[in-house]
Image (cartoon, rainbow, N blue to C red; front, top):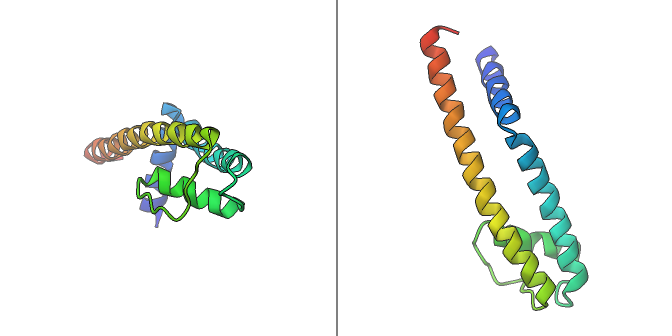
Length: 111
């Protein structure tokens, strides 16, 4: 248990030192804001839950097709969300690699 807490602490340090924590939090906030804009601007999306579901489909690139946007504003929001998601995934991947590299280095040092 102590080892897991130590690993989480290291991950937290890496997220904070790289600024990835702020990037992740801003991305989550953007998803919720984007869903709100989509719900307001697109007549085919009537509920906020549907807008969030649509955002999930965009982020995951699954594109289920059960919720489709037609307004130019909603389409633009989708494009921006896709680009933002790609950047965040790349950053998180780098942070995870850095995390495991740091764990291995600390293990070799005996910490």
